[in-house]
Image (cartoon, rainbow, N blue to C red; front, top):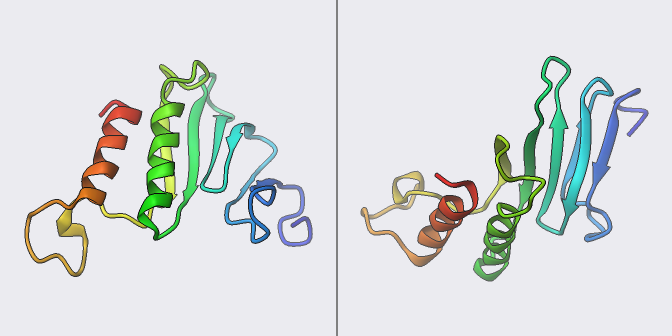
Length: 130
């Protein structure tokens, strides 16, 4: 990593996967503290140079398997009650392998919402308070 991005800092979730499904990199001027890691998510508290308040950023990469995604939805809703996260701005970025609305799917045939889509939306509502 140092050969590609000299001076940058980095972390990954290789402890959960030989493939290291999630890699994050940042400049040293950004203060980043990893709150938790799993196969599907790395959650961080981030302090940007021009700000005194932290932002919670979760980097996500989940499976196409519905049951695997449900584990991530549970992880997100659980993280929402963590005292290190509550009351702070929060962004969740990455590949969810799930649409939020039927219209986002290229194969959408109507406005009906399937169970997977409903569970994803509910986890965002419960976890992120939207």
